[in-house]
Length: 472
Image (cartoon, rainbow, N blue to C red; front, side, top):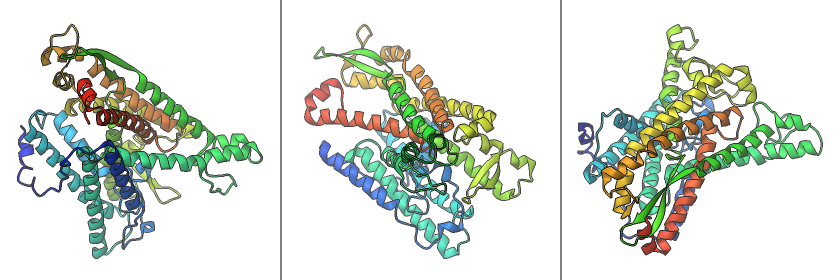
């Protein structure tokens, strides 16, 4: 095991944690608790930070709010950002082999979890301080700064523990996925059905604007293309991308398996979207935090974009809402041109962004299978543990791993590229929310329904679930 993990052993007892329930909770109990966690997060996202005025500063996260499940000026200001960043750092360290972990060793798995949670708390505090330094809340007194850091840190720890509670059998699915799904769904509904009227007299909601145009003024063409506002093209693109993601999730290779004792034939599916929504979250974390924070820091040292060396990282300007937006450099090319008009204005930017997201999707997807218990070796061990074997293949981990290597790495690579490409295309077409957010919400919904179906079977028919290798 890597020495890095041993560093966290002395503080393991100091890191707050959620234990697994003493008894196995029923499906109904987990559904109810999942809903309660969602309500708690929703309430937190509507409680404003005490002692500050957010209108005095700019919003560095405005472009990725949906992806990070965060809400400006509230207890969920940082959203799931610190947790995702901690996971990203740990994946990079494992991928670079700076950390070596035996997933079959309970002690090493426990220390890995402690290390990731400690990093998440660290990033919560660090991002809180960085927010203040960057002037996101304007000019604050020392006591106000301390108050903001305390509030954001406390809220961040609550979010970390809620996510852990859901994953430790007190809920269903993942807390991070649940919080993102709620945020994206809310954005799509507002963009489609908002009854607020803009200055031009059209409804803000794209669907309502189209209905309004169909029965009077303005014209349908005006409602179809409204730069800066939800429009008909964005509405159609949203459903188009959802349909593509649904179709991609149906593409799979089914490996024939058979139970060793009961001789029951079954199939183990390897989906094209093998790593599901994790690469999208990691792409968002990489773009929004690693590069954006660096660019913002450089922007502070280069306020007038006069330093050619620092301009390579990014040049910035303020938009009409007071948000700092990139106009050049690396930061400009890793942010999406939203809408058809923006793509036509700068096609080179669109091409570079498309390539970057496709590459990142492939990299994070491959990394995910190595450390997320999804590699050919891990799947082979899981099948054997469930007493499932592949007909015609010797029932040993090595032989089954060799067979699964024909499919799993390729599915992860191609699926990762598709995830990144679809995310970029959704942004280019102006789909509601963001490209990454929409892909996440669709994938999360599919994943959540699948988990609920499997766990319902495990709850009602535990013996059948054991035979089929379904665990809850």
